[in-house]
Amino acid sequence: MTLLAVLLVCLLAQPALQFYVPGVAPQDFKDGSPIDVRAVKMTSAHTQLPYEYYSLELCKPKSGVVEYFSQNIGQIIRGERIVNTPYVVEMKKNVECRVLCQDKKWDGKASAETSYRIEHEYFVHLIMDNLPCATRFSMPDTGEVQYEPGYRLGYHSNGKNYINNHLKFVLKYHLDEDTDTYRVVGFLIETQSVDKTGLEIRDDGTCSVSSTGPQEVSLTAETGLHFTYQVVWERSQVKWASRWDVYLEMADTQIHWFSIVNSVVVVFFLSGIITMIIIRTLRRDIAKYNMAEEDLEESIEETGWKLVHGDVFRPPINNRLFAAVIGSGIQIFSMLGITIFFAMLGMLSPASRGALLTAAIFLYEFLGLVAGYYSGRLYRTMKGKEWKAAAFLTSTLYPGIVFGIGFFINLFIWGKHSSGAIPFTTMLSVGAMWFGISLPLVFLGYYFGYRKQPYEHPVRTNQIPRQVPGQVWYMHPVVCTLMAGILPFGACFIELFFIFSAIYENQFYYMFGFLFLVFIILVISCSQISIVMVYFQLCGEDYQWWWRSFAVSGGSAVYVAAYSIFYFCTKLEIDEFVPTLLYFSYTSIMVITFWLLTGTIGFYAAYAFIRKIYAAVKID
Image (cartoon, rainbow, N blue to C red):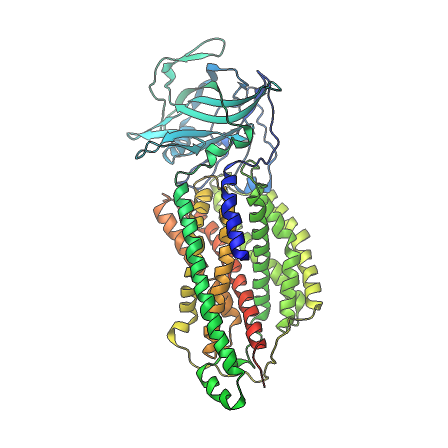
């Protein structure tokens, strides 16, 4: 009943998520008040390498001073470098045509760089009143109007590159008649490429477009051009709290709904079947094992999980590494659960730029206490002696992998002069946070966890280990892992598509209600499949279940890795070395994170299950 209640709450809460829950306070403007237009970055789905706005020789502010605005860790990692621009926009003041800068000259190198970015379909992202700009377009097959973040730097046609050097800002405002103040509720951009000769510039800085001929950017030679813009204000009935709706509407929302509900139904159906089989089989086993003495030998010959009662709690090999892996998984599980929950409540909305990633990093640091405690107690249970070494391994295992991969790929991104390269000072800051917060908290948690009584086991462990008989082919660890990974992956692969789109195609991801529901289903399916596979393993008199329970439950990470390759081949048009390396480096971090998460869930489910069933039978 609890699961049904959670399901109903999540499904009923979904319509409310279509309204933007503000992460910042609204700003009111008077008629004629100036509004800053800022640039965030340039992005391309073809290269995955973001660049800051002034990486090209674009028009600088009139004062000549480029001002960088403060950013959080999440924004820096995502490659955002927010700067001021020379656009002058005033509330409710239309501008027919104004010169941004004239007689701009690019040498051959600047022209070649601009041409490269136009060919790779780079988008420029501007924000005004913390609202990102968007471009409107129609779907070719249905004619349905859709919006995409940013505007295209230019376009490629007949072997030539043309830059969009004339922008039309279509701005929408909402009037509060009680206070006679205005709020920005829409920021659309219509682009146009206008040849230098097709612009008539007046002495007062205004202009008129007399030709629609495009402005070509030379591939090697010098390029001369003007930059102009137009401002059009329109009144809108959209309220400030709903102004993000246009960005968050997806073309395939119905498919998203259908797929999620379908996954929910299938997973709950399969989980119900698995639970029924396990309960019926277990009841029969326990009833046989607890029969009178004369019937006991016959029942033991039929099923074998009781035969290994003297070895089932024998500590695994590499118990220090096992404790570190489980500790890392607990830290990731806690961090993801809390982050997704608060994001579902709207506290980490897209308006709070970088807040989601920043919150996840800080939560991970502080949850080292939880990871240390549970890992320390488990290490004590597995008869570990060197708890300080185990604590150090737990605190460095996952961060070390992430930092190693991140630093390696960063060397290549630095070489491309991309804003996606994490600055060295930011690396030092994150390292200092880990060394000053996470590492001491893991040791503190280990200190208390290791001093606490170990987990109680219902049966004693024999001194001499039992020999494991030969196993049938389908109980091989690789086969078990591949079979077990299908169910958890089936629960989340639809959501995986939207997450990949948000990361690699610069889309907004906001359906955290769906994600929280999928997270719950993932926990249930990983627990169920791990219990089933470990039960079959014990029936085959193989008691080495510790690492196996982690591996089979984490098998879905294999399918996530396979899906990432499929997504790369079918959805992304990446053909250069560094972008390819970037994609697979970041994806490998996702796969390792998913593996630790699902493996830890499976282990704890199997551990609780085994302690329960061996406590239910009478042991001589």
